[in-house]
Image 1 (tube, rainbow, N blue to C red):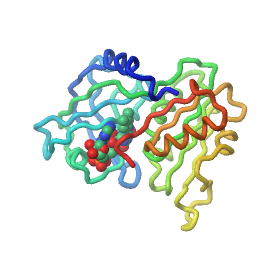
Image 2 (image 1 turned 90 degrees about the vertical axis):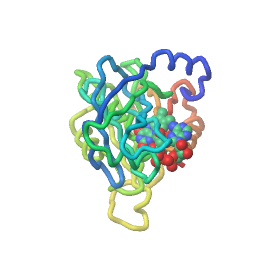
Image 3 (image 1 turned 120 degrees about the vertical axis):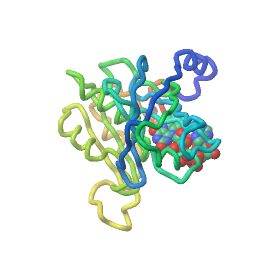
Length: 256
Ligand SMILES: Cc1cc2nc3c(=O)[nH]c(=O)nc-3n(C[C@H](O)[C@H](O)[C@H](O)COP(=O)(O)OP(=O)(O)OC[C@H]3O[C@@H](n4cnc5c(N)ncnc54)[C@H](O)[C@@H]3O)c2cc1C
């Protein structure tokens, strides 16, 4: 598994990380209580899909407290001319000032960071499992692959409680229509008793993963979401006999 490779990997990550000044370009709601924030892409900042940044709000950021840093996976693709993150908006000491910030507000970006990076074997498939806002690294992967002449074979299993919670759902459906190599499985686990959704409602299970990955060439598996969800998915993939080397994950620490 990518996660937990230890101090050597951590030191290697620190070596390639840079510090950059940037500013907020704007933000918009992309699902219930969920906002995307766009930032100026600093000169010299490069990253690969699945990577993250540490976003620091400077001391003079309007309304800021002592709690000034969070990590976010980049939702934008490397070819885009701005950096985008997306997050569930909660009244936390960090997110309140971020949510109220005006375009032009200055931020400090450290990165790229994170424990997950996309494999570089074009003949092998990518199977992505996203819990809620864990979609962020995978929308970056998909936007990036969609630009290529020969996008890699991919499947995404995307779990939310309700459709209104599912960020980027319309874009994902459009990508599935456009890309022959992309299979999308969406499940809404909070709709079983309430209705309003006629698609899949099961939690992601081995049968769902096997079906999504069937016929895909030697997939690597990627998981992003809350630490509990990631742990459950890593265990499930392990129980399914997937090789540890082919399981990669990003725990969105800070969510329970
Ligand atoms: C590599 C990585 C990528 C992430 N990508 C995303 C993303 O794309 N979108 C997203 O919404 N969230 C992402 N997260 C989680 C994000 O950093 C926040 O923790 C989360 O959004 C909750 O923040 P909050 O202010 O709402 O919660 P709060 O309730 O204020 O935070 C919960 C508690 O956790 C602590 N905490 C917050 N972040 C961390 C951390 N990284 N490590 C240890 N403790 C922490 C806080 O100090 C606080 O005590 C990612 C986390 C990591 C590590």
